[in-house]
Image (cartoon, rainbow, N blue to C red):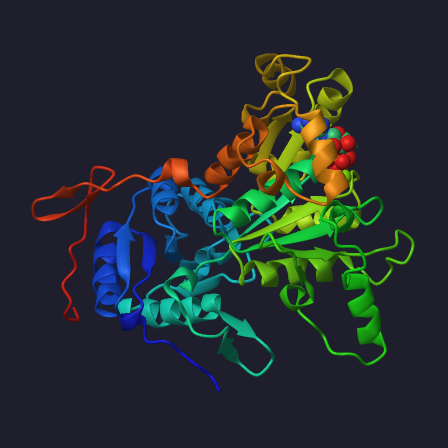
Length: 420
Ligand SMILES: Nc1ncnc2c1ncn2[C@@H]1O[C@H](COP(=O)(O)OP(=O)(O)O)[C@@H](O)[C@H]1O
Ligand SMILES: [Mg+2]
């Protein structure tokens, strides 16, 4: 059965970055359709809106005006807090001029000028429905009942990567995932280190099903099983899925397919955390391409700093530098955090202190820090990172102003409910 929710019963927000007169009409039409329409005037305002409203499901963007502004806005939709589909409004004559990083996004749509406000509404509704639905080949089918947390929400895909080994990638990926789960988030932990991965062992759950097992079965006629279903549940609330148990039988792991499966899994959880192998393999690059954020752990020592400087340069080349989030691990040892920041040229997004003995115990016992030592300072460091990921620090209460609804000092359209 195809379940399609009535938008009126499930208000979601839509961001509008359009010329003023168009924005007013479109906002009125969307409000009539049960959406909350927010008009923004530039990329900066769009960023603020996305940070403060997790329920923005679609962004309607003008692609004809300022080309730099349009591409910045588009970047924000896809590379910002989470990836959100964009409806690009464009003149047929300027389509060729449109320069989007990576030639657009699979979930984007285009509407050519002239257009009606009503046509925007239909498109937005369709995009919104798709964003909460999974495609099993027979058209949109919603994943169970929609609860308010699912409205248009996509989880964040967080890759944990540094080209250097031993800097704490696995430690940080695992404990961050566990703390997010402890915060009530739905988390899928992917062990994508196909060479030296040991997430399952660290969690005391050896022998769990892997993607390689499943995709090999598939070649022999077995069913195609999504990542979320393949994953094994850990008592701490995490779902855990290693790509492979063996470093040499990984041919079946086509990078694009893995990346697509991660994108699909992201729709069913709040966070997908992927612990990567230290290399620039095609698989890692496919994951970088889809990641909302790349958490880069580094230890405060010269080899790790050098490796991270190289990563920064590669990231420039791959167009992902703005998605790097540096985490200084063992921050209270070696080079001071300020100096690490200066050397790498990127501000630290987070810090985790050193806690050797506790970590050794945790790994030996197959437990995570939040389970073994919830009150320890190192665990608090992870809670700080988790809150940052969940956007807690960014939440702010919009002020109400007489005669309208003000957000960020701007008068938002108090759109009439009746059709224009
Ligand atoms: N903050 C920390 N304090 C103490 N030991 C740590 C810390 N972070 C990592 N380690 C230890 O360092 C070693 C390498 O960490 P790991 O997470 O496996 O690195 P990577 O995945 O980057 O190779 C492990 O033995 C781990 O327990
Ligand atoms: Mg590792």
